[in-house]
Image (cartoon, rainbow, N blue to C red; front, top):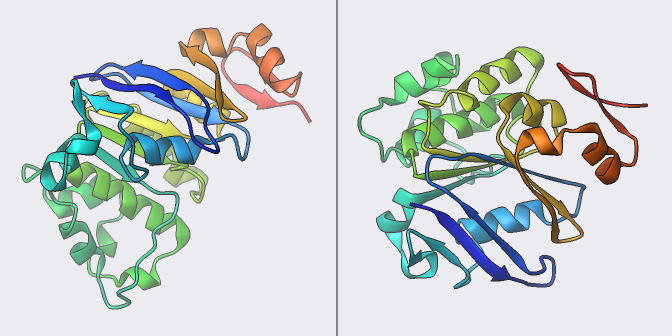
Length: 232
């Protein structure tokens, strides 16, 4: 069941076309303002278009539960307007995969102690992990994560990396990130945006070749073999 976008353009993105096969994973990279979050919103239908298809069906024509089953967007920040809602109540709204219990999803992310906590009391890192728990409970065919490690301390980042790198967790993962080390270690295919255009789309091995990094980052990123680092 491929996800396919064909010749999409707006005021930010220009002639975007690519195909992601079911069961495949992708990291979307690029500088601030390159259009990464806009692309994610297009791919999940938050920006309406007829350029996106899943298994040959227009995402535009899917509504409600039908759309929820195929694609899910996890934003960079948890925004909630009900100040009394608990973590458990919030996650119940995402509980499409009835084979997984809310407590099990929280345990997987090592935040089971937060189950009864009001969402308004969560730290930014805790909120990020609760959003990730919602992705597990939703279990759409394609899950898009927007900067999933942005607010995490090193130990929680390791927890999230273990989840994202587990082939048995979620069907197809699309990860927007500025964290090149995360993208390098995940080994997903890479789509690199520059000023709203696709500058690179291919394997992580090709992307992290030093010659390719030099072309895109002008000498500011070095591949050390086991790690990639910013050359300060």
